[in-house]
Length: 128
Length: 128
DNA sequence: TTGTTTCGACGAAGGTCTTCGTATAGCATT
DNA sequence: AATGCTATACGAAGACCTTCGTCGAAACAA
Image 1 (tube, rainbow over the protein chains, first blue to last red):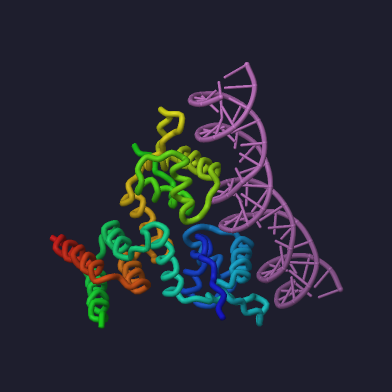
Image 2 (cartoon, helix red, strand yellow):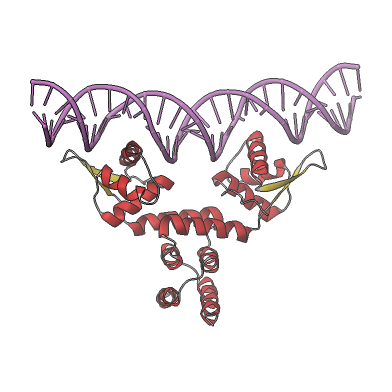
């Protein structure tokens, strides 16, 4: 059975975002993608990916000399885990409090708002 | 000129929640409130409150022998900071993605849903 | 073949977080 | 005054996070 994965740290999350965006990547590719916003040493990226492999956050393919890394969980799964975690720790488990705070803290576009409204309708219809 | 406060850590957030709930409290009161869910040493609580005082997360009133601590920021301010932070780090700054994830990851009650809908209406009306 | 580049492994430094033991001072009761 | 309880201060340990330097091996080029 899948042994619960640890919550990714800051630097680990940045790497996951690269892998979600780019797909399976080498250390070099991850380092360069990250470096576009903030320079990072090659061995730093390597070490992080090694640790993430130990933790099970990513899977390593050693078929080629330059190993390939891919995320074990999807963005949705990871984001859901992070949101649930913050919900528990900071909002006493209340989804609505978190949502209200998120919508107030940053103005969303009308398109985004209608997306939210759509989901809201679906959820309201489900209470069979 | 409020000097930006650091993001509270896990243990610090647990303490803030006690202080928001109970108001100004002594170390002993905080320790006992926290201990109801998870036992914690007295000096551990003390040390955390001392560090939080250094960071400016709480304010210490030394008028009595047993010092009183109170939060510097309101729940809303702190929660907003935490949500914005997660929004940036894990959702690329998209409020709607975070909201959708929050609503899907935990079923909210009809009351909560209508609260969200109300805010949604307000926000939609604002686009003058 | 010999030198150069690129790779992964490893260890360690410096920082933060959380916990706790010990020391010390104030205060009350005897 | 002496004892005991409760408070704060301080230091340090152990875990984790992030970064980087060094090493040896593999691939490649001259």
